[in-house]
Length: 52
Image 1 (cartoon, rainbow, N blue to C red):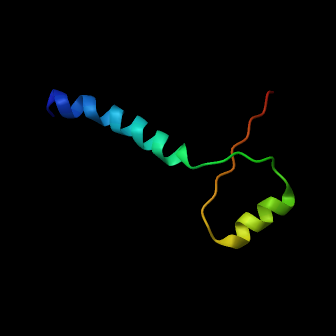
Image 2 (image 1 turned 90 degrees about the vertical axis):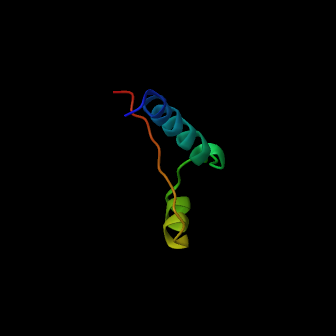
């Protein structure tokens, strides 16, 4: 593998992550919102954090 390709792979991975999250909006979790997102058939993501 050439050095240029080796260095380009991590850069593309970071760029893809940034682009995929660019249109995302953050909302508080509610059961109703979850059910609506599930019923819509559109892709969605749940992101959570536990401090323990």
